Length: 293
Image (cartoon, rainbow, N blue to C red; front, side, top):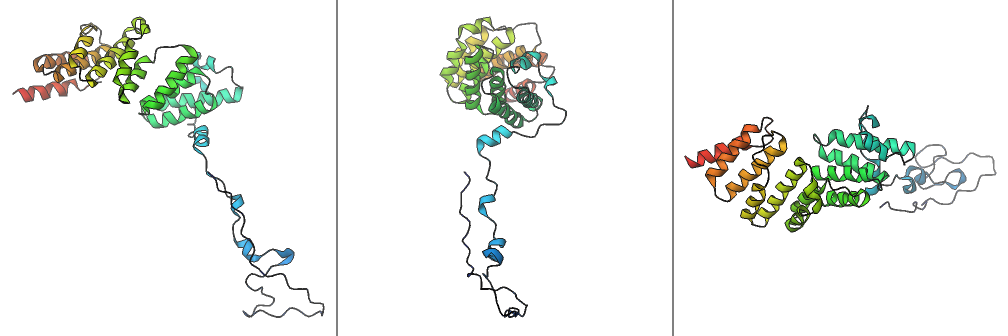
């Protein structure tokens, strides 16, 4: 909070009366003609000391946290609203033109940096949220950036707000994983049982399965985690990332359960379709083989 300080009071003596004899004033002790003594007030009663002392009233106050969030980071050159999906831009049309343009640029910057610098992406998302907190897509972006940068409580809050605004359930897996990160696995399991999960597309349903199994493991229920994963399409012929992640989660749970041979087999099956190396399945398999020898 900025301090409000009164200016320092002048310590000079009252100004001497002007000589009426026509003589020039005597030189000061330092030999200078008419040199004012320390603390002597000049014309108009203004102290020399006062001129040398900064007036605290004109110091620029520090920015508050809310002001800093509103300002946000500098926007990269070339960032415009053209980078956004049309559905996102459509939600911003209810804002004044200049405000919508600024929010759109911060959202675009958040999307640009979310993989390479999640914290910077989060600060851009906060700047957008500070300007348009009642727009669902803005709260979704803030929640996603908060999750990517490890601000799990904030992510949960923003995604809940977005869900209240538009009823969307696509972010339920992220919300469940936030509960896990916050030490609330029971809440993650509760979200995984939401009726809307049954209608999720395969990738989203797989993510929720992985989170639910992880929550069961957090609670020490490894066998329950295995049963949940065994009901998922582990043998899918697809090589999509969600299949890779499902197989890896199953292999990891098998390893925790002490079923080393089964775990090794599933790490190899994961490695076989993990062309982009999004997991460390190869390293895990090598480690198990090394321990077995």
